[in-house]
Image (cartoon, rainbow, N blue to C red; front, side, top):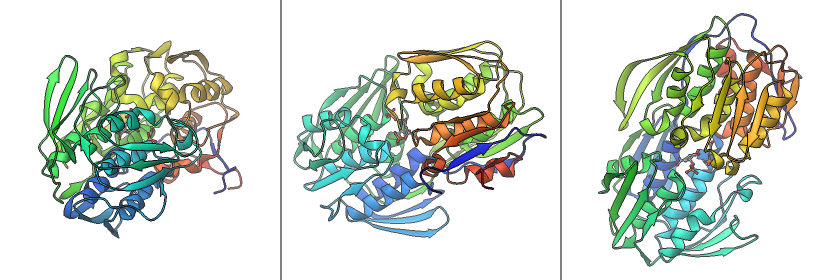
Length: 442
Ligand SMILES: O=C(O)C1=C[C@@H](OP(=O)(O)O)[C@@H](O)[C@H](O)C1
Ligand SMILES: C=C(OP(=O)(O)O)C(=O)O
């Protein structure tokens, strides 16, 4: 697929039906590779997401000195040497904010020098949110092109612990500081006024690190003591709720549909979208709840539903920050207004996701109001019939393609190749359920 290609979703004539498995969770996939690379000994991973973001992290971990082997589909082995060493080449994190920020935190604890870079989208994203606290711990950074941006050079080692109070609920910032703290002297503390996803805390324990988490107000105080070694372990990566959202959303909006996604991770810091859909009147059921890989997991079934607009509580934002694009596409089919506020962070993701969704939905005939830190969608008939810009953002592309499955006219997206960063099998899965997504040439 070339950079200027197009994908088109045509209105589904029948309905969507079937049972599918969500791809491996992206957050846990990054972490399993990075922690495995920092650890001593062998880490066996199953269910790893083989998306482009994760493959970039796998290459980075190898460049930092670990042995990384693919054993089969989703089955990987990382043999760590108990620390990172200076890489020979630039660490290219591709499109991945999680990859670059967690790797910077991990690398900062070791005496090494590394250059981090990424694609055009990553080069636009803020990095001081991570380099700032890491510099407070003693790491040094050179901006190689522009302040606050990659490419940058990190000089790591000789860190001391810090107490850092988060100003945005960000698991990437928290994780970078905790990973650096593992190799700092003394105690490292992260205080989160609002909870963010806690996969790092959970997975550090699986790698035999001691992490102390206490409730503080609405959030958490997380503490760890420096000088701890990670030990290789086995990681079973559950299905990604952020990816499961797309087939489930399609089932909610295409009449007559019923879709089950199996093995979806249900960590409470990731399920805000499902709570919101249920409040909108969605017929969503969760069965076969179990624990896998240290996380709650279940099978989710969505059936076509008559939805009503809601006001999404602002304190839910962190638990569904990547899901507002697909929520807004579903909201276009709901009766009334869906109000999404307190989500300024959306503007600093792979694209300005508020601006892109407002532009794309409007082009498809949906009534949308843009605010500085949010947007409001009023549901009604969705005309479609537009070609939408995605700014090479995977979630913008997938959200508009799902929108198009229930619209009056097809919806096309430009530059859909980035879907492979998080969900390489998206088109095949949607078409396997009865969708009609293809390139114009097809
Ligand atoms: O820690 C993680 O794995 C992630 C944290 C979130 O970013 P922030 O930490 O910037 O909120 C999220 O948007 C991203 O897709 C994955
Ligand atoms: C924001 C995302 O990822 P990242 O920050 O890792 O690029 C995402 O997957 O929606």
